[in-house]
Length: 190
Image (tube, rainbow, N blue to C red):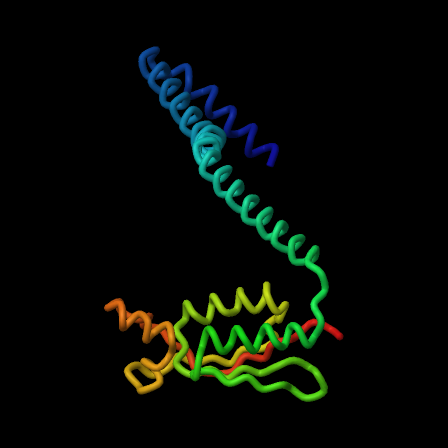
């Protein structure tokens, strides 16, 4: 390795003085341009890209922080609520199922006080989402399992839910996505 470097240095020292002053200057300028380009690509460009992307990253992280703070506030509010009895939770859940789904849902108590199973037919997606939030806050029921499939469009059950009937009466288009299936909900401990 050493002899290779020495040989290269010897060739360079023999070749460089033979060049004219103008050629030496052009080679020096070309070498300086190559060094500047490498410095730009390796050191400056990545740093400038990071610097220019920083405000967007900062805004994204701020949004995530706000969302986490909101979730923390919700969790603390749920923890601060007084404990509901299992019977109160069951009554609140039965009422919310009747009001939200009408005849398109059937509530069954699971064995040994484990919770409840709710079978739904052709329930609009937005109604289901609102009901889940309501069941969580009012009855303190937590979904343990969900077996849902997209409902066939245009069936008789698709127009029999209260929200769909209300939307049809107002002339609005009911939600296109509807769900069939079962939800297993856990209730507060006794």
